[in-house]
Image (cartoon, chains in turn blue, cyan):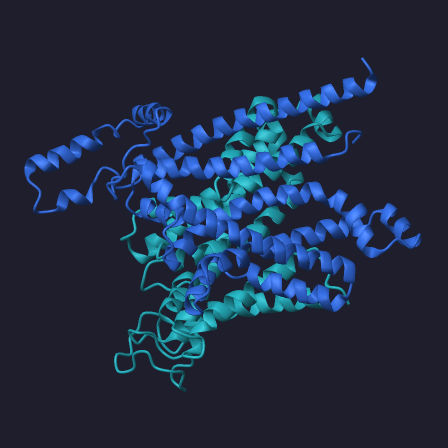
Amino acid sequence: MLPETSHKTSRLKTLLWKITRHLGSIAALVLLGGLLSATLVRIAPGADSDGRELDPSLSAESVRALRQSRAGEKNILRFYVNYLRGAIHGDLGTSHALGQPVQSLLRERWPVTARVAGIGLLVAWLVGATLAFTACLWRRPLFEIFGLTISGAFLCIPAAVLALLSVIVNAPGYLAIALIVFPKIYRYSRNLLAKAYALPHITAARARGIGELRILACHALPVAGPQMIALAGISISIALGASIPIESLCGLPGIGQLAWQAALSRDLPLLVNLTVLVTLVTLLANSGADVMIYMLTPQDA
Amino acid sequence: MTFARKLACIVVVAVCAMSLAANWLAPAGYAKQFREAPSAPPSRHHLLGTDEIGRDRFARVLYGTRISLLLAPAAALVSTALAAVVGGLAGYLGGIWLRMARGFADLFLSLPWLFLLITVRALMPLNVSPLVSVLITFLILGLLGWAASARVLSTSADALRNSDFVLQARASGLHGARLFVVHVLPNLKPVLYAQFWISIPVFILSEANLGILGLGVAEPLPSWGSLLRELEGLLSFREEPWRLVPLVLLIVVMTSFQMLLSNEEVPA
């Protein structure tokens, strides 16, 4: 076998091994995350009480039936095993608070969060990366100060305040998500690019008269790129986290608002499913970024 | 220390001093109601006006600042101590302990911070006395915020475990807890200090988020979170701009922390 072919085969093997390892760790962490959230709900004070039992119009039999319906949740391990068994067959349980199958709730709400967080992320990346690239290309202290001030100001504002402000000025929810995510993207990208620009080969490229745009595209970005891809994975997690206060305060019927309602009503089936879903999306984003970095890294690196 | 950092330091110290002197600076207690003047605009008696039930907003800002600025470092202390125990010990012991601690930290880090925080806080009792609510908020922040610091500390402790001086200490017969406490932990101090300072602004923001969602410090005790909740009823910025004072103060303090912690120099 030629050395080049053998190198390609070993790289493919490493990639497959990497993907398998990621999938294994995702499965383990998702399962543990679900169990952790179920345990938290069970040990939380007042977990055994059900507000519906206080309804005076309910007969003793109805109250007994309500208690019976929650009896399966007393033993957390049994509940979790039953939940997993149901999940394998496509049954994610029924929400206690909303009285609807969790699957249909997730199907209804997920597109809202995906749209709001997706557009927010897109805007955040457009603004953050453009500012970072411009700072590197233009290299004007005033522009640097402008970028640092703007990003710094938004880093200091809590996500919930941005949600309230967006309600006051009647701005869409995705804008609030963009304003939460963009400062992190700008600052991190700018630092990565600044480190890349400090490398000797870029100084040499400049000395040879290569244009700034070409230096950025051909020399700085390949160095900073892998970590920027990792940042893309992390930014998904940030956007998901921010979607809870934003959707709750802006009245957007998405996953964030559902998580908020589930937590307040201690809705065990819904909360376990949401934890599993959020963990899964976060880990998939991070692992996807990791695999992509490996695939884009030059073969001889 | 650059001029910007000196300025930031002065701002943080001044805000802390003012909040600690709230008993003397505030015209009234944070819960005292001036029932003849609800929702009053700023005046000589009420510098920032009064809220809907007639409480002096300036007094509430001072007392709220005190609570938020005390709560965040206290929570940071708990989380850093927990990170030192979990991450430091795991790194020092190595092997399966290190893998287990990192796996557990990864589990915490795989959940978005706000999701974890809001969910856990919502599961705790909500109708509690103000002091208990402060305790719950501070404990939740401290007990949930350890994972990232623990990961950093485990890496540092892992590097120390294989260092020459630890090997020499081992060869001299020093083992177990004594080796960890006398030689490893003191060398982790710089990382511990860094993690402590980094956690403070994160916890200030987290408390504000919780407070706005009604999951933070309970009324009538003020905090930046509960003060910012007042923005909910604001129809426009021009209507009552003095209601934005807690937000401006939060931004000023957070910016000062950023300047103090940042290793970036603003270009001249």
